[in-house]
Every structure is written in C-alpha cells, then in structure tokens.
Image (cartoon, rainbow over all chains, first blue to last red):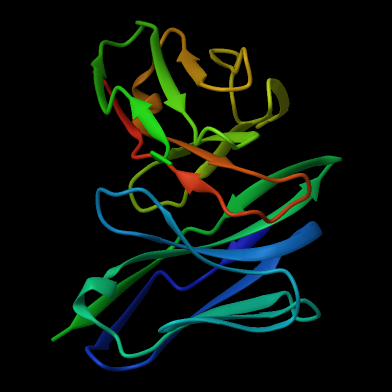
Length: 112
Length: 115
C-alpha cells in the first residue's frame, strides 16, 4: 500500500528555522511534493523533489532521500504568515495506476 | 492565466439529494484531479483525467460519485443520493504533464454540507 507520515503539529517563533519531516511508503515512486494550505484556503505548491538532494526556493528548502524514503521541508526566517498546514505528497503507482497521495498535514504555528 | 475556478463555492443540501460541482482548470492543462478534504486531513484523491479520459478512480469512491470531462476542458463531479458523510471540501486541481510529479494548481474548492 501507500502511506505517508508527518508530524501533526510544530510550533516555532518568528525568525526561527523549522524542519517538517515526511516518511513515505509507496511503489513506483516518482517524487515528493510539498504544499502549503492556510485555513479556509486551497493548497498551494511549494516545492518538488524528483531526485535526491536539496532544492532551495527562497526561504523554503526541500530535501529528498529516495533510499531512506524520507524527505523534509525546511522553513527559514519564519514569519507569522507561515502559520499554515503543510502537506507532503507523493506521486506513485499502486496496482498499475498512478495517483497523488497526500499526508495528513503538519500544522505549523509561528509565535511572535 | 486565470487559475483554477470551482463553482459553487458552497453548497448546502438535504440528504438524498443530488449535487453537481464544476471545475474549470487552467486552460492549457491536460490533467485534472478531484480530491475530497475533511477537517484536519490532507486531500484525498478521488479521480483523475488526462484530457477527456478518466484514467483513475479511487476505490474509496462509491457508485454514487461520477465525474466527467467531456471535451477535455471543464469537469463536473456529481454526487447522487447524498449522505451526511459526504460533507467535505471538494477540491479540483489541474496540471500539465505526461509523466509524474508535475505541479498541481488547486482551485478554491466547493464546501458541501449535507443536512
């Protein structure tokens, strides 16, 4: 089967650095994506890792280790507006069909 | 690029009624996805189209759910004989891709409440 695990909640202060981990189990793995969702809003794309290593986009970085079935999202210089839920998502194959599987999300609270 | 749009944004219905939602993807995108999301959970995959072909439908989806994308552009999701358990946010996303792992762009969602 396919599954993803990420922490349910993380709290940090403004200006700090926070890492949100994601471990996954899937067959036919293509890559790991990260999405941000504010309360009442739609998920928005943050980053994608198709290969091992670190991808950096401004204050956000994402890492993937395919051998460990593990990835993380790193948020630097936290701002209040970063308070949101963060989802990892894998694109994989199960029983010959392809689909995206999202984790249950990590709720990030940024404190002043 | 006007983004992905969904209509209606909110729908309240009585149990047993049928509802239909519409999704207009980004115009050049060939893939369209439907998801369901409940409070505190991640988006749950429902079904996926590449152009007008429905390539995958979740086994979690009962026969009461049906989706179409007749001309490879907009899509509709119909729920027949709604149940209270169908109450959720229904999200549509579109992307351009031929393999896997492409960026999905989500619409604002349709929030369904079944009384």
